[in-house]
Image 1: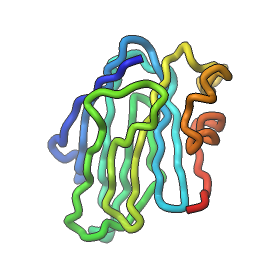
Image 2: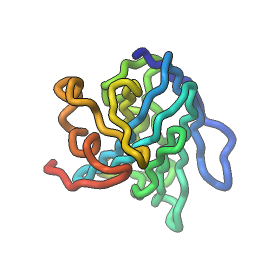
Image 3: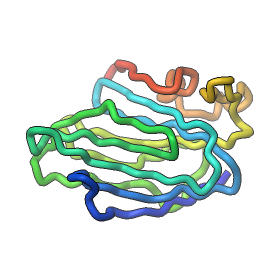
Image 4: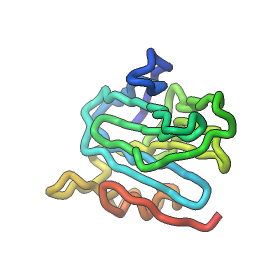
Length: 168
């Protein structure tokens, strides 16, 4: 499944810096959203998405101007549990989402200049490559498991949201 992405920074919303875009695909898909913050890996899963699907990335300022809550959302899946201290209060989040991509690859979408660096990525899979449970939580079919990146095995087979500590 081929993917295409577009988007850009928009007018701030309620004090949040916002990047807004779209993912285009030729058939329905699911998405795994991943944030890596040094020692922790956070994840969230979407339900099945019909293309095109909206993508947003908000940088929500907290009390200290260098302390922010990045929030990434694809359709109904969202990561909001990450908070970081920016290297400097005027640090800029770098969008790195490619213009085109392939299903089954972990695509880096945003880099937050924190210490350690925080990255937000996403992996999209065709609806045909997953089993969807009665609650909408999906897991990859056995046939594609050997093709998937090992860093996301726990999230792929886990619940709708989660976090794991990992060795650095």
